Amino acid sequence: MQHLSTTDLIDYINNQLRPEDDALVHAHLDDCAPCRDGYSTEIALTEMLRNQAKVEERELPPMLKAEIWAKIRAEQPTAIQRLRAFLRPAYALPVAAVVLLLAFFGPGYLRPQSPPAPSIDAAYYLQDHAAMNSTVPFGDHSGADPGALEETALNTDESAVNGVFYTANANP
Image 1: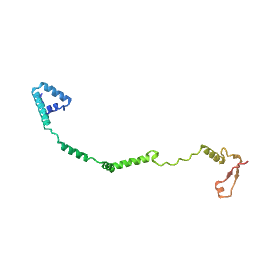
Image 2: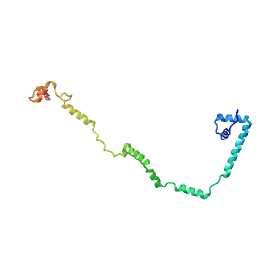
Image 3: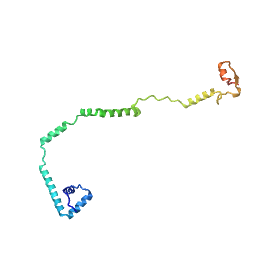
Image 4: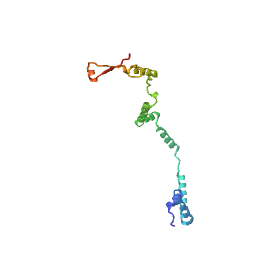
């Protein structure tokens, strides 16, 4: 088997290999002395770079930190600026559309109420039906006798069109 590359060793150290590849590299390091030496060299180099970065890491001066925080606080929007940003058309148009839809389709208290329709008692309809039924010549309650109908002829244009007219005698 060929030796591991520096890239493979660095990926193995930083746990960036797939589990299968990680197992192969681990098995190879157990069997191959030159690759173990390369692994040790890479570990030492990584630790040396980390220690150097810690040594060179510096803290910002307190005055510089204060200036940075002051600029950050100064750039935060005020309440008026937030309100203006909210009223921009990108926000105002959808909000207005929702308000209009709620006003149109919303509950009844958002719309003016019309007075309730007057209610009519069912007895009214029964009386009206009885009155109408009594005027029909052959109705149930008309009192007309179909045998008492007499034939009359009129000397008008209607008699020529319709022929014979019948009248009901309600009082026999």
